[in-house]
Length: 583
Ligand code: M6R
Image 1: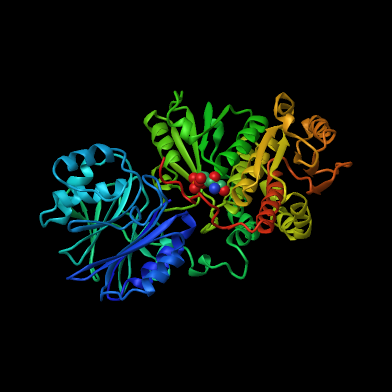
Image 2 (image 1 turned 120 degrees about the vertical axis):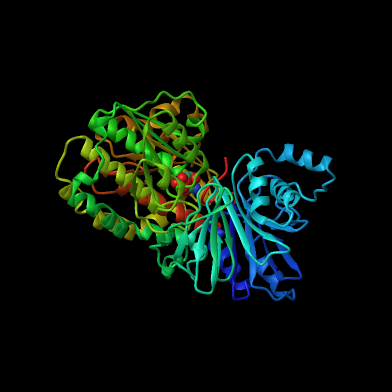
C-alpha cells in the first residue's frame, strides 16, 4: 500500500526522503514521487516503477535549495500506475501525498468541477488536494479541518502549502507517525522510514493535525493545540538490514528459533500472563491472509483441546456479515501490521456490539494494538519481506499458548523447552527444501492437501508458494478433493500431503494414494515416516499444541527456494502490499 514520508528541518530533504521511500518499499508500490519546496518554488519529480528510476530522475535534475519536502510510494487504486496519477499532487497552493482511499471522491470532484476546478489525474488524492486548496485562504489548519470533515474513507496526508514553510499532516484510518529529531521533524507511514534519523515519535489520533517546522512540532485537535506524549521506538537500525542474507524473507525465516525463544519465555515463566479464554462462551477469530490461517490453527486447537466454540472468519467478510456476538464473546484480531483496514473495521464492529477484543499483533504503535481491549505482542521485530513468515509462526505459537492454558495443562516450560532448537534444526536442512524445489519449480499448478489442523497448514503453505513464486497453488481438505478438484491431477502434478494429526493420519494417507495413482508427484510433510512417495520431509513429533511450528517453516523454505529458482522478486512480489490499509 502507499507509503508517505516528509521532512521539515535544517538539511536538504532529498536524501532523507529517498532513504524513507526505500524503507517503505516493502509495503508494495508501482510509482513514486517527491516534492521539495522553498519560499519561491515547489519542485515535483515523479516516476513509474522502482524507486531507483525516481532516484535517477532526481539525480539528473538540478534541485532547488530546500529543507522541506514530502515523498510517496503509490500502490494504484484510483487510476493506472502512471506518472500523472503518481503523488505528490499539486493543486493551486497545495501539494499533497496520500495513503488511503477517499470513498466520496466522485461526488466531491463533481462539486468542484461545477465551481470551475480542473482535474488532471484519475486519482481520489487530487480531489483531496483540490478540496483543501478550495478552502484555503491563509489558515492551513482551518483549510485541512474543513476539507477533511467532508471526506469519507481513509487517509494519511502529508501537505505542503506554497506560502508556508511548515509541513502539515493528518490521518484517519491510515497509519501516520510524527518523528521528532534533532535536525528537524518528520512524518512517515511507519517508523522504519525514519529510524536512521530518530527513534522519538508521536502518534496522532484520528483527525489530529500535525504542523512541523525545523525546530517545532505542534498537534492540533478541533483547531486547538494539544499536548501529546513522545514515545521511543524499540527497533534497531540494524533491523532494517538483511544482515548478510540474500533476501529479507530468508533472514526472517532464520530468525524464527530465536524469536520463539524470546517471545514464549515470559509466558512459560508465568502462565498467568496468558489470557484465560474459558471465561467466554464463544470465540471469534478474525483476520486476513496468513493471519487468518494462523487463526484456523488456533480454532482447531481451541475446539479440540479445550472444547471452546470458535468461529473463524476473514475480516473482509466479518465486517459486513450478520454477526452474532455480545459481552460473552471474545473477538481475537490477528494482525502483523495492526493496520489491515478490514481487520480494523472488524475490531470496531465487534467493540460496537459489546464483545471483548484481544489483539495478537506485532506493531505496538498500530491502530489494532491501540484500540483493542487486550493485546498479546508477538515481538517479531520489523518484518520487511511482503510474505509473512516469522510473524505467522509467532501468531501460531501464541494460539498454542492460548489453547494450552484453556485446556487446563500446566507444564508449559517442559512443552516448549526444545521448540527453538527443533525449529533451528529444521531450518538448517536447506538441501532437502532445495531438492524439493527443483522437483516443482517448473510446474504450473501445485496442490496441498491435509485434514483439520493439517489443512490449516496447507492453506499457509499454498499461500506462501503462490505469493512468492507465482505458481498457481490450491489447498484442499484431503477428503474434499475427490468431489471435483481431483480432475486437475495429472501426470507429474505436485501434491503436498501434510500429515501430523494422528486421528486422521490414515484417512489423509488414503487420499494421498488416490492422487498418487492418478500420476501426482507426492511430497509428504509428516511427523512420522510415510513411505512409498516421491519425496518427503519428516519433522520431529511434538505436542499437538506446537506441532505446526515444526511443519510450516519447511513450507516457507520450499516456497523461498522455488521463487529463487524461478527468478522472482522474492521480497516484493508483484501486485502485493505488506500492509493492506485500504479495503
Ligand atoms: O498485517 P496483517 O497480518 O494484518 O496482514 C494480513 C495479510 O495481509 C498478510 O498476512 C498477507 O496475507 C501476507 N501477504 C501473507 O504473506
